[in-house]
Length: 507
Ligand SMILES: Cc1cc2nc3c(=O)[nH]c(=O)nc-3n(C[C@H](O)[C@H](O)[C@H](O)COP(=O)(O)OP(=O)(O)OC[C@H]3O[C@@H](n4cnc5c(N)ncnc54)[C@H](O)[C@@H]3O)c2cc1C
Image (cartoon, rainbow, N blue to C red):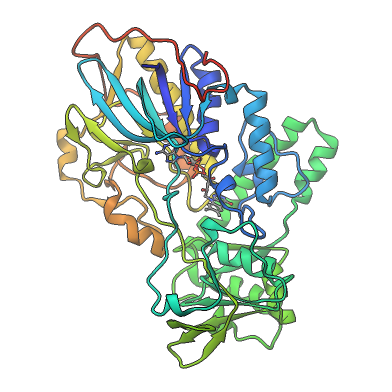
């Protein structure tokens, strides 16, 4: 049975970042990455729809340790994949990745302080078992099996093609076709202008509007700095600038929602011109950042709407018909292709079944410790990034903190770290883990997610400045994270890692 000190689950942005942290900050630890798919990249490999791109700048969505060199700071999926490929190759991380290993179950033994992890090799159906001391779940936040698709009456009657952005057919021909995109989130906002360039017409059908903000896809300051400074210095300055700027804007918008609404809508009106009904189609009923603000790079969506190659309809689907969608208002949208950009299905910890000393873990009944570990679950970290800033900023902090935990255990001769409620924490009022976000995909999953409390370290502030203090400077031995040793003092000897799918032997 292969054994490693740390098993990382997932080779997306977070898993690759976690591996780099281990190599540099906890270099004596052995590790492996089990990845359920056949390639790295996670989100950026899975989503292949036209125009797929980041909506955060790559100076903060990229890693602190690897400068983003491309001219565009809002990057397409292919450029992000190239960046990730370069990262794993440059740092020898590729040698540690075991592809097509879908982790299903992890069972903890306090006797030996080990996890026994079962994975299905997706190419053969075979089950393989690994052991490790610590699991770092970098499995993202949504189901890779399917996207979220509501029931649409009459779906089977529709004579055209129905597509979900999570499962985009490589050969989908949409040139000259009438397309309806159902949804108003980041995916719809990306897809509509991208498809409008070739389609006969694209309609964005939304139940309710989303806040949108146009911005350039290049960062002129970043590119100017790169021209005069060494690459790393330029990147570090741009990264700090962008973190500070986004934090400032986010806080201002949350503190002054009316002013923020006026500001955002004024810009939309200016971008669309006088002939468009901004009140109906671009004015949400919630405050800015109650749901994620959508970036419109170079105003591409506004341009498509202004020139008539795309339009926005705010209405409800009554049913699908032979040739389109009938709306509750009585109107009908003709379509050859319907794209259900209706969102993601959120899951907890890669849909893995966790068992601790014989007891199945129900994460909905656990308290999230600093938003990355769970009460009474030992030697487990999971990465959930920011929903109001670049994901990687938080993934980076967590990966660093995991190394701090491991190094602390080394220094103190302990092998187990478990967050446990203090007696005074028993009275905590539970709050949803992502309580500041009202988006449908978050509400749908809220009751399956762990709770957060009302005091440190049981909170998930989703605030980079606060997190930085919690993860970088607060002591790891805080009286809540309990450090102990295995009940039995003869943990198994590490065996050589062998796997037919490993590219090369692990270190
Ligand atoms: C279309 C889209 C655009 C986005 N754009 C942005 C953006 O601009 N800015 C931003 O901050 N965030 C964005 N996000 C959020 C985005 O998911 C993160 O930025 C980031 O890519 C997440 O990286 P990750 O490695 O944590 O998770 P993922 O990218 O989801 O990768 C998880 C990996 O874990 C693997 N895995 C999962 N479960 C298992 C298992 N049980 N066993 C083995 N392997 C498993 C998956 O196969 C996958 O490779 C976007 C999300 C989507 C869907």
